[in-house]
Amino acid sequence: MSERPDGRKFDEMRDIEAKVGVIKKANGSAMFRIGKTIAIAGVYGPKEVHPKHMEDPEKAIMKCYYNMYSFSVPERKRPGPDRRSIEIGMVMKNALLPVVNLKEYPRTAIEVFVNIIQADAGTRCAAISAASMALADAGISMKDMVSSVAVGHVNNEVVVDLNKEEEDVEGTTDMPMAYAPRMNKITLLQLDGKISKEKLKKAISLGMKSCKKVYEIQKKALKEKYSNNGE
Ligand code: ADP
Image 1 (tube, rainbow, N blue to C red):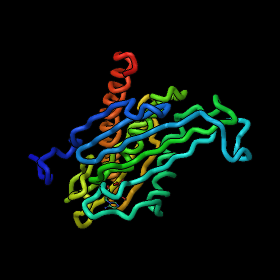
Image 2 (cartoon, protein in one colour):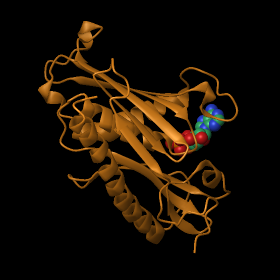
Image 3 (cartoon, protein in one colour):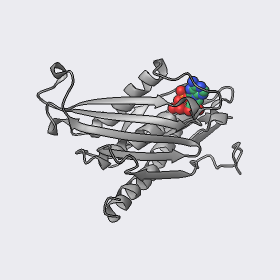
Image 4 (cartoon, rainbow, N blue to C red):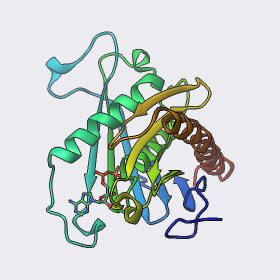
């Protein structure tokens, strides 16, 4: 009884593919694809801090960079950082910080780079899911994984994982979420649009349920790498 443009059920995410170890020179890396949205994450560090005065004697500093390639969208995007990508870098960092044990790496820097090579909505969520896998792949000490997906309200229905066509529907509410499943902690909740209290509750619970499914896929990808002797 689906009314969604691509035939999905309201609680059905797009097809997901996840892999770690995709950038051999990085300390950790991951690819996360959800539908046509593809994120590649590379983690470098813990390493020396430049400039040195930025060092924290108590813990590592973590920097997160988000970039959308020019060719990732149908109309060529102007290359380089813009306000949106700077904001998403910050959003990613805030969503990941609660799970990373930075205190284990004083006086170092951990850098997380995410590039979006194809965008069809939900890129910040794909970026967070990929970054979390890349941090784990780098062997960084973590309390939990972070799994991320957007929920929202489209055509009077609460749905998960909006694609671009749904995001563009007049009156759509988009709610990117990130969730640490074992800690049972929501680490990101953004809200773009309006939603009633009842539907908000329903959306958050659908988001948590869906993030748990993302978590299983992330975990499987990490296990796969180590059962293949790291190749
Ligand atoms: P998210 O990708 O997390 O949903 P936004 O809501 O800011 O973040 O963007 C929604 C979608 O709009 C993106 O996934 C992408 O498909 C498209 N988009 C964003 N920025 C641009 C741009 N500069 N040019 C073309 N499309 C864009």
